[in-house]
Image 1 (tube, one colour):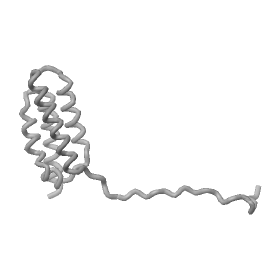
Image 2 (spheres, helix red, strand yellow):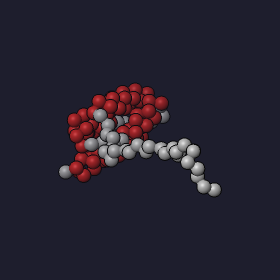
Image 3 (tube, rainbow, N blue to C red):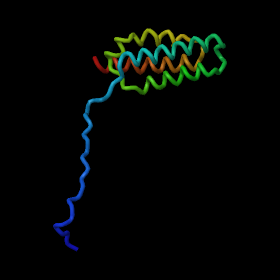
Length: 115
């Protein structure tokens, strides 16, 4: 069947091009995440080191979220994130300590890859 001239033209979707630039986290957002994790770790410490508290779980979840973020070396150095995470790496709660050490190693890898 042939297409007649009296039909309207077919609609085409305009595809929006995504820029190749990766979206990065702002330093203020990283500072907020670090402060949330630190506060939760302090509260979890007060409840006991080997007690599974909602605060300890929240701290671990925030640390895992921070690990999945696309961080640049500039943001890591500017926020002084390594010092805060080194404090959390000495926490008495084994889950918080393990996750913060893992995040520290990841951030050190990001810094090493840039230089």
